[in-house]
Image (cartoon, rainbow, N blue to C red; front, side, top):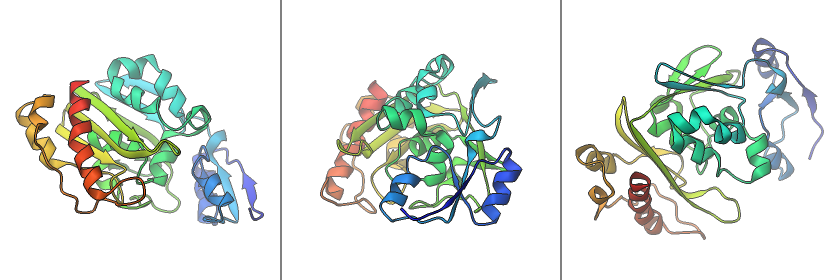
Length: 260
C-alpha cells in the first residue's frame, strides 16, 4: 500500500473542500481499504467522514425511515424502529458480510461505492428511497448508474437516506460463500410507489425486474411468480454461476421474498 495523507474533517463543508482538493472520501472503509491493499486504488489523500456530527442515526416519522449515511449496518440491523417499520431492511443489514464489516461498514459508504453485488442498493431501489446529499435529493431510480457508478459528483457527500415504509417487503440473498456478497439478491416491496422488485449481484449493477413487478402487482403472492422467466441479457457468467443460473435464481428468490 502506497503512502497517503489522512484527515478527519469536522464538517461536511470541510469534507467537500478536501474532496475538491483531491482527497478520497472514506466512510467505513470496508471496500476502499481492501482495494488499496490490492493495488486497485491508490489515493494520495483520504478524508475520513467519521468525525462529522449528525451523519449517523435513525428516525421514523410520517411513514418514512430516515437513516444517516454514517450509520453502520449493525446499527440498522439492531434498530427496533427499523425492525418494526421495515423488517426486511433490518434483515438485509444483519446479513451483510461478517461482524467486522457490519460494525464498520456504513449505509452511505455502500451506496457511494455501488458495488454490483452489494445488498443495500437492492433495498434502496425496491423501496423507492431518496438519497439525500449536501446539495440535493436523488431518487433511487436516478442514483444508480452502472458498475461502481452513481449520480454523485466527486465532492458530493451523502448525508442520509429516506425509505418510505411499505405495506409489504421481503429480501432473499443467495450469497457467494467466500465473499458473502450476493450471487443474486432480490428485494421485493409493495408500497407508496407500487410494486417494485430490485435485483443485485446479477450484472453490472442493481436493476428492477419489471416482468416480476407486473405479476406481483396483479397478485402479491409467491404463486404469482410460478413459471416466471427472466432474460439473461446483461447477466454475468463467471466461475460462480452462469447467466442462465442467475436468471433462474431471480424468480425463485423473489417468490421466497414474497412468501417470507
